Length: 231
Image (tube, rainbow, N blue to C red; front, side):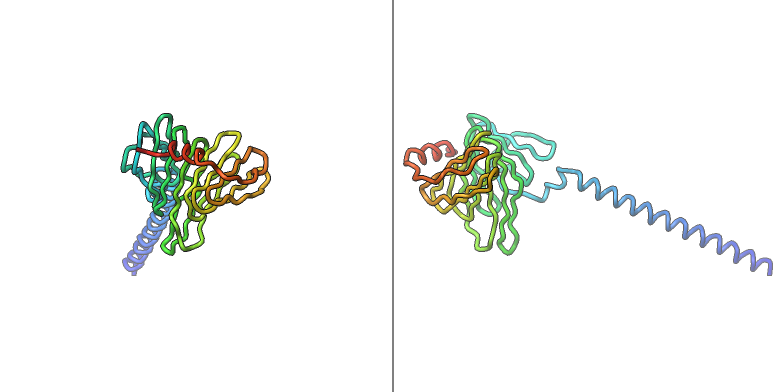
C-alpha cells in the first residue's frame, strides 16, 4: 500500500511539473510570436518588400531612391516600392512603368513619394503620389473599375481616371496641363475644385482657389513635353 501511495505521489508530482513546463513553453512561444510581429510591423524594409509599385524603364543622369532607411542610386530595371522617395536632381530625368501600366516621367528637380500604389484582381486602382517639387508627366492607364489616382502637393491635389497630363509644383504654387482626358484640381486650403479639359491648363496658388482653366498654347505643351522626355 505504501509503495502504491508513493508511486501515485511521484506520478502526480511528475504530471504537475510537466503541466508547469508546458504552460511555461506556451507563454514563451506567445511572447516570441508577439516580439516577431512587433519587429515585422516596425521594419520598413520588410514591410515594403512585397509592395512593388513600378520599375525604372528609362533614366538619364544620376537619380536616387530612398526605401526605408536605405538610399541608393537607381538604374534601368530597378524596382520602386510603396513608401519610396524618388529623387531626380538636375540635370537628370527618369521614367517609371507602374504596375497598372501607367507611365510616370519626371523632369530634373523632381522629388516624389509613392504614398500608395495598388491594383486588386478586380481592377480597382488606388494611387497616391506626394510631390514635393518638380515636374511630372503621367500617362495614366485606363481601368474599368472605379479608382483613385491622385498627385498631392503642399498646394492642392490633382485627381484623374485615365489621361495624359502634366503637373508641376513649388512651395508656393502648382500647375496642371492636360493633353488628353480630364483632371480635377482641388485647393488644399479652400477645397474648391476646377475640372481641366483636354488642351487646357490651370494654376493654383498656395492658400487660394484654383484659377479658371484656360487653353494652353502649343509652346507651353512643347516645353513640358521636352522637359519630361527621357531620350
